[in-house]
Amino acid sequence: MQIKIQQLLLAATLAFSGAMLPIAQTHANDQGGCFMVDEAGNTISLGSLCGYDSAARSNKGGTSASAASSNGVVQVPIIRRAGLTPVIAVSFNDSQTYEMILDTGASGTLITRRMANDLNLRHNGEIIASIADGSRVRFPTGRVNTIAVDAARVSDVDVAIAEDMSIGLLGHDFFGNYDIRIGKDVVEFSPQS
Image (cartoon, rainbow, N blue to C red; front, side, top):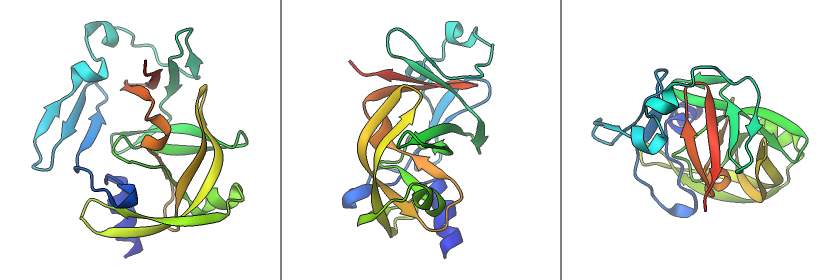
């Protein structure tokens, strides 16, 4: 059962506080395209929303380190991909950095038990998350002081703690105030105006 839950979470839309969100996955492929697969399995192009035009594709050079521009746009390298989904470096409490999946369909951030132990998180409650198969799963929660991806950061966030996950999911509670562009080698976080 735990393995099934872990597999579903990686492809799921997490919906916290009992709200159910539509199940859809967004992907950026290695050619720089961006698309969404809806519940019926139809592929919907999101190229214009993700900023993939001929000008964006012309920058083929990879980025090896994070960079924040003067307009507040933060670029972070994609370390690897879990399937087609970017894995990036995420810092917690200005002290620990972990590889996490950037889950554009997750309402909240989910960390592993090991991460919670490293961060000395105390349980402050629990949430119920709806996963892709429609079932609901309970997770203990803990509060982190900060979550940061380079200069992009949020403070005082309750995160869910998964007992049997090997990697965490960075959710909307982190990037909700940013527009996100997923490129071939980098993810850009642009502050919303």
